[in-house]
Length: 112
Length: 114
Image (cartoon, rainbow over all chains, first blue to last red; front, side, top):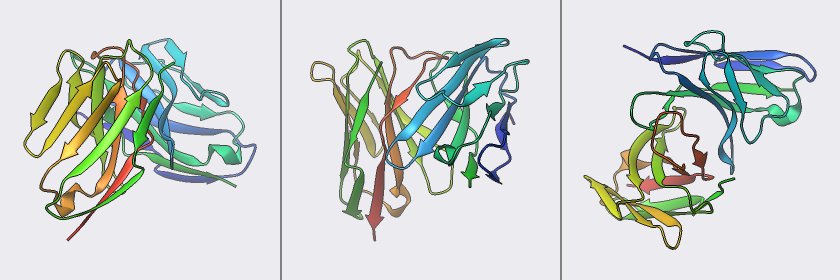
C-alpha cells in the first residue's frame, strides 16, 4: 500500500545544531508539505513543493529549508536549531483531483 | 493571507449529545473547507469537506454547513460516541485541488464523556 513515512519519530537535539527530518511518500504525489503543530496554533505551513526542484516558503519558514531532488522525498532541515522550534512536525502530500492531504505519522523534535 | 479562527478550543459533551465547532475565515477567495480529525498520538485525517457552491453536506453523523456571506463554516457531530473524542481542525483554501495550500484553524479538543 502507498504510504507516507517520517523519520526520526522522536529526536532531542541541542540549540545550534543542524537537524534534518526525513519525509518519504510512495503515493507518487507531486505536492508535498511540511507543517508544524503547536498547542493553540493548529497546523502551520513551513515549506511546500509542487514537484522536483520546486520549493516554496510557507507562513513560518524562517530557520527552515527544504529540497526536492525526487518525487518521493522532501527533507526538512533546521539550519541552527532553536528552542522555539521544539514542536511536532508533520509531512503531508496530495495528488490526483482532490485537495485531500495525506499526513505522515509526525516527528516530535525537542531542542534543549 | 488567509486567517482561520476556530472555536471553542475545548469542548466536553455527554455521550449521545451533539457537538458543534465553528470556524471563520478572512479571505473571500477561499472556496474549499475541509475538516480533519486527529486522534491522540495519531496523524490528522480528512473526515469531511465542503465547497463554496454547497451550503451543507452530511455524512452519517457528521455534517458541515457553510455561510459564505458571513465567512463562517461549522462542523456538527450528532449522537456523539467515545470514539469521537479527538482534536478537530477546520481549514480553508482558495480551491479544491491537489496542491492547494490549506490554512488551518487552531483546533478543537473534543471529549465525549460516557
